[in-house]
Image (cartoon, rainbow, N blue to C red; front, side, top):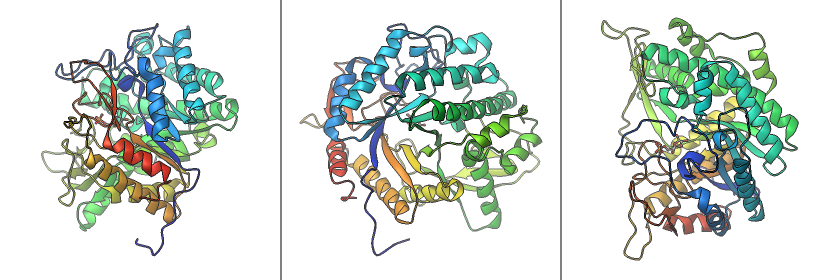
Length: 471
Ligand code: BG6
């Protein structure tokens, strides 16, 4: 709604930016790091792998100095689990611990609050080989042991923790679970078993963080696209409700309310995919809640009804990567009202405002936007600078959405742009850039990996300096 006045950003707002270990660190085989599922992933050879990435492992001091110059109040990064435990469990790799201690100390000295993701896609390959990873309940103990180690080792300085990045996507991506594509029904079923184990593991991590980290706060980091009913046909509105439950709320409902929402439960039961729930699992979730909701927001999607017919029956799983079309439930259709990135992600800042309000209404926990950013193909101009006006426009409009959500009472901790420096994009390598800082490399040509500030760096610096009064 439009209002006469808009409240300013609060003084303690965490102006942040984010990365993930496998996308920026490089040094994939250095100093004792073990392999993760991302390292062994078979991928399109035209896209770079993660061996060097942005070489943050060797440039971290320079990168933190740039963060300080930008004025960041917070930096979200992930710990590569296999740098600490090369096999996922067992012996600790001291050099990995040393790296994160050094990075955290550098951030603290720069006055930047570290926000640490424990697990951002890079599951230890060792645990896949030992017992099949998240499909086995032993995965819960190993995740919790790793989390406890991190809380005890870094918790004197790290007060904000994130359990699992985009669990809601991981469970639909076989390779991120260490599975081959295989039978789609079995793969889906395995994904939802993994989902249950991750929710139990997250609840135990919430508990451990509260016990081990003085003043520690912890939450999930889900992906949350705004969804719309495509029309005012009642069937589209109902399909939208189903899609919200099945795509957006299902993990958070378990994390926060300790329950499978009714739509999700019926969906799983209908398809014979309900995972075994052991006594105590749901109680554990209900008793150990997160302190905030972390979420990544990039785009919105439009939903319309998709009735069954002789060709499309309930339980025919027409999904692979993400469920964009399911007979008897819904389908995703193009929204004619929005423009999109080069990759077809529909740009929608008003959608973010709606998401913030929906999340606040349903969970009443403060929000932390853990990722929001604009991916683009980029080349520097004749002066060597990337003039990324599209990114500035995208970020400022999304920040205005945050401001407007706060204006009607939504509680917020902060906001992180994705990403601070250019990183390897999950699906498009170095051809799709997100950073405020350019990293001088191409897809396969490493060049000198030097850093240079984009126009958006200066825009974000000024925005933080004004505490968002320019938004
Ligand atoms: C989020 C992930 O899904 O989206 C990031 O947490 C990822 O790791 C980001 O980079 C953007 O996706 P992509 O495929 O453009 O890199």
